[in-house]
Length: 137
Image (cartoon, rainbow, N blue to C red):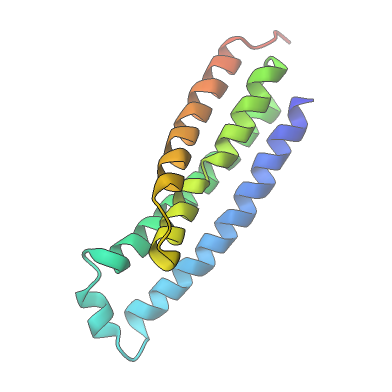
């Protein structure tokens, strides 16, 4: 049963990573090819441009963590409850980079950033405990 969770995390991680890669390509365009690239570069140390880069980096990192956690769920036997909670907490961790984008583009509260950060940390702890309590082969 834990295999379904692992597959979900891997698939979601790959899709979200692809999305943040496209977002990264847009950031490269703005920095290197856009007509007002000099202004974009000048404002990239802080403010909205910094937040955009922060979202891109964390989006790819948390996608990669979902893939790694998914592989752990596929390859280590652990009690079902740890696999389930670890999987869902890891997916909820994706709220962090998405929350940064929502804050940047829609002016939403940073609550999603905090929830996502706490969730990805809790996922790491939960999966670590689950692997430690692993069911022997």
